[in-house]
View 1 (cartoon, one colour):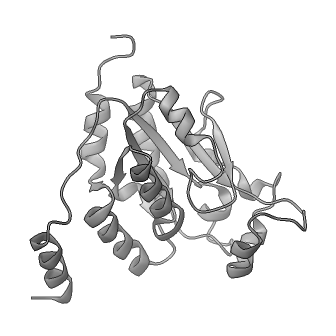
View 2 (spheres, rainbow, N blue to C red):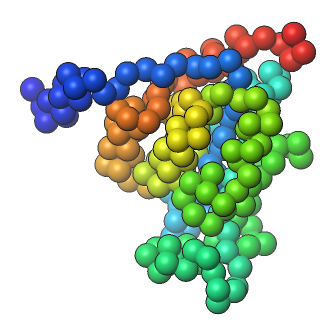
Length: 216
């Protein structure tokens, strides 16, 4: 038995990794799929082509169903009183995320629509310091499909907060990515064990396609 298998068996024996399941009213969250993260030449970037394609397939399934779709970006201005100054000190590469520059714009391959809001954040979680929880509550959502990057950072933080705000977090495995496979896999394991359901992309797409038609 490998170390991974032994760890998985231990968690299952102790009651972890149970399934939450889908609710009745989902929303789709696309976390920080911005050019600074999808451009491998950026100090924050990596090859996320497959992730972008997976998210696009979710958007193609979600848009006809009329479910809420929310994007996030992370950006900083030139203020010396930056609220995220400690975060930036920890990760100086965050300085490339300058407000108003192409680096913080949503990857154009996702073809964001004007009706799909972009929430601006300065920290990891899509909930912290934003109106996301209120937006989801106003739409009567009980399920949050979390996609984007990075798995070990902003995706994980958003999943944890989604659970803490009372939503059912669903993570399509192929629709999240990281700059290194080790943190990516470790955090998917931990999300599945404690905070949400990590599912195959096809299963999530099928769920979206099976939703009642808008207005039904």
